[in-house]
Length: 305
Image (tube, rainbow, N blue to C red; front, side, top):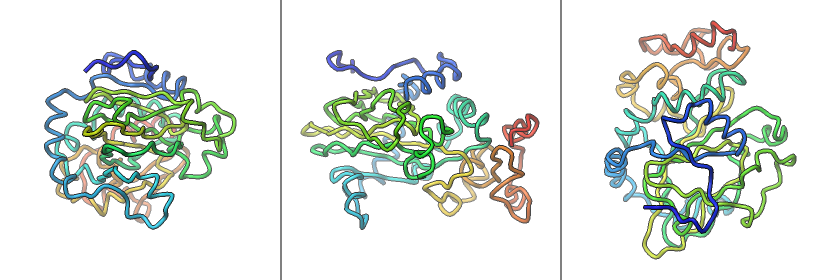
């Protein structure tokens, strides 16, 4: 479906043919970028088929005790975590994708060392849902917002479109350039936002410093579905406790890198001898996981751990 030319949108580049270094440069410059055609139509169809059943069992809205969190989650919005268990396509074809991790390495390895997965969830905005509160993804960690634009990169979020995302059905709205504002406690206004319209299979990649929020779904019968998939430096705590969620039988089939980003291997922030260990030993050894994590070995050789 062609995008409307009536409203300015986010900078768009083709996935795979755009070098990872160029993508990360653009994200640093603009605050975010749309990667076109990351998933094929066939991959999107298979992933949706896997997700439909589990998502059907979830009610829209939030059960959180705090009213402001319920408002943030959305009354007509469904959120389903644990996609790594629900979707074989995500687990085997997306989770350890070299193109994604080459960009994450560009962002985190130099500043922070290793990184891991903060969260991944299906977000389906239903008809009538109001616009989400504008926010920065890194805000929940407190310290980064105090550091402002010169602070290290603390969150990278990939929003993978599983349906077309239009301005009418709730496409994520972004304030380009807000990652360079001096005051990170300033949240901006809806009038400053532009819609990140996506075709199914596209990805919106944004820095945790940029202001954004889900748009209002003004349609009568369209559901906007994306996977929000975020990463953080390994000195921050992830939202989801994957070692208690993902079964070991699945983990043993994964690459060392995938095991590490899920927390089944030790973490190596820059200038650290290692975190997330057991008796100062690599966690993978204790868990009986085989293979060497090439990225960790490279970081050690460069003295960036």
